[in-house]
Structure formats: C-alpha cells, structure tokens
Amino acid sequence: MNPRLETLHAVEASCWQELQRAVKARDHGWRQVVLATVGEAGADARTVVLRDVEVPSRELFFYSDSRAAKVTELVADPRATLVLWAGHLGWQLRLRCTVEVLTSGLDVSSRWARLKLTPAARDYLSPLPPGAPLTPSEPDRASREHFCVLRARVLSLDWLELHPDGHRRARFTAGSEPPWQWLSP
Ligand SMILES: Cc1cc2nc3c(=O)[nH]c(=O)nc-3n(C[C@H](O)[C@H](O)[C@H](O)COP(=O)(O)O)c2cc1C
Image 1 (tube, rainbow, N blue to C red):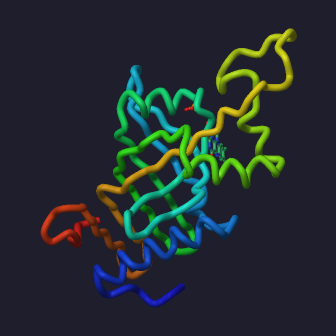
Image 2: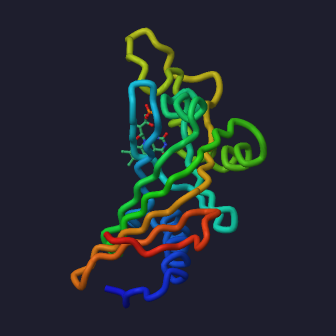
C-alpha cells in the first residue's frame, strides 16, 4: 500500500492524477463508473466507461448512444452523481456533477472519427435504441451513428479512504471557502 497522503492538497492532486490514469489503464477500478441520474420514476444508475479527463476545467467525458434513457434523463435534468471505487487504492469517489449531452461539434466529431475505425463503433450503430424490445423483423444495420459525448463538470468531490489504520474522508466543493474539508468518515 502507498504511503498515506497527509494534506488535502495532496488528496485533490492524487484524485485527479488517478482519474487520468484510469482513462488509460483498463484494470483501474475508476475506469468503470456508476452514473446516477434523476429519472421520472426516481433515481436511476448504470455503469459507463471513463473516456477522458480535463483537469483544469474539472470535466470527465463518457460516450453513449444519443437515444439512451440516460441521455433523455440528463437533457431533462443535468444533475448526476458519479460513484467510483478503486480497490487497489482503497478509495471511493462520489462526484456531484452537471452533465451536458454533446451530439455535434469538435468534441464529438474528433472522438467519433477515431472510434468509427474500431469494433466499438457498432455500439453506436444499432438500428434500435438501447432498451427497445427486440423483434425478428428489425433491420440489422443503422443508417447512421447515434454517438454522443457526455461532458460531466464536477461540482463537488467526496473522497473516502478505507484503511486498516483508520478510514478518512474529505470533500471538495467548487466555489466554497475553503474548498476542501476533512469530514468524519
Ligand atoms: C462494464 C460496462 C461498461 C459500460 N459502458 C458504457 C458506456 O461507456 N456508455 C454507455 O452508454 N453504456 C455503457 N454500458 C451500458 C450501460 O450500463 C447501460 O446498460 C446502457 O447504457 C443503458 O442504460 P440507460 O438505459 O440507463 O441509458 C456499460 C455497461 C457495462 C456493464
């Protein structure tokens, strides 16, 4: 286990460094993120893959099908919570965010240009929206892609460290003074 971080500043820097690592490292626990949204019937949640991190603007990027239920939910209410767990660090992150759905522009076209050359492109080419009932007569190819990018701006970050010497918790809230605070776990 790594030496324990002593300062809130070090905790914040390490969280963002680990998020950047998770984009590249397939076995990093933070690569697979639980995205919770507000649906008409109440809370909803599902797993998505972390694709990109912009540290200066505190933004995380995910890919989805623009017809998915989560996209409809986020357009109606952009509030979301992301939950991440990395067993090798013993760290849980709970990120409160607002999420913007991007369906056009450079952020989308540059990523689709790379993705469409890979087998993963078929995830965004289905003729049926995600969650639609399957029937035998459906066509098996889409006429166009339904790729979209979800841009999550982190408003607050709740860090929980599980450790044999004692658990620790801290929260960062954008715009508050001071932005970081140690909390009882
Ligand atoms: C390991 C894993 C990774 C996933 N990654 C994504 C993803 O990056 N984007 C996505 O839209 N769905 C992803 N899914 C599928 C979603 O969890 C979900 O089943 C699907 O998007 C439909 O969700 P919705 O009806 O809430 O929109 C993933 C599922 C698993 C199990």
